[in-house]
Image 1: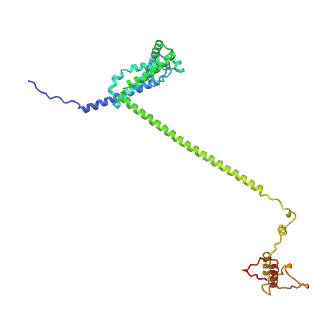
Image 2: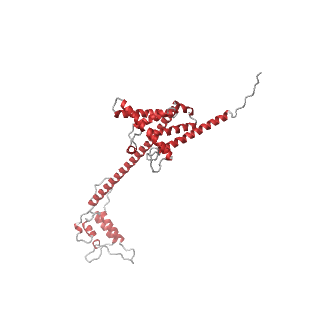
Image 3: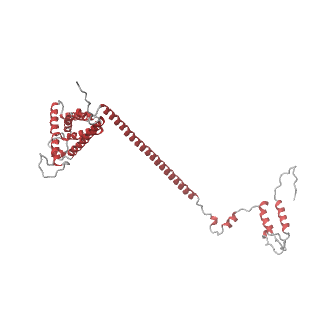
Length: 355
């Protein structure tokens, strides 16, 4: 006889288990990020003169991790050279994936190729030319002893010149290092497509910003050039106007100079000379103003005698007395002036009245 027993409830429900698993992955990611930063500090502060298990010196340790860091960094650089930076980049990449929960399930299938990436990076570094400071303190190249050994074997196997072989191997190793780095970092095809789209969008935005800046710069430059040209043109027109005005002023000053009148030389009164040179007017209308002046000179009353008229207008007899009075003299002058007027042809519709 079988007895059915009730199953025991789990200690933690599914939601709690998922939360614990999620927090555990985040802790792993934080640990990997810290490990990557430590390795980067150790590799970045590497100095060949630091005391380590291969070098004995009393000089102070310059490595940021002290003597342990110097003791680890020295053999790393001796073996793989600058390829030791890959040991710092891989933990950083996977630490970010674990913290952000993006593809962390691919860690085991991808990290298994990390040693291959390290070897390819060492071979690529061996194709680079080291500097003078590196040659003084190291007996190997930038790829360490491993990179130099593998590179030397490849150069002997390739049936081409060593110069061309080094360039070819540098190109191939660079492409392989980039491809393996993307693969070991856990990138999938979808992520690469998305990253390519974002990269293309970034290039387009950067190009648009640069084009906009260049367009604004060209527009402002064109406006500045136009304003400068207008200012130059206005200055040239103003200068031309000033020169024309100065030339006209000189011409007017040249032609406004008068020659001295010889009639005025030695004469103190210019009005007298002008009056003497002016011809005497004859005729009735020329004599009317003189007659009017003489008429105005008549006495207003017996108490106010008028001044005597000009001598040439007063007619006297042999005894020296005036023959005519003022009104009679005016009438006589008018009659004598009318005698010199040439008569016009007689018309039948007009009646000529003789004086």
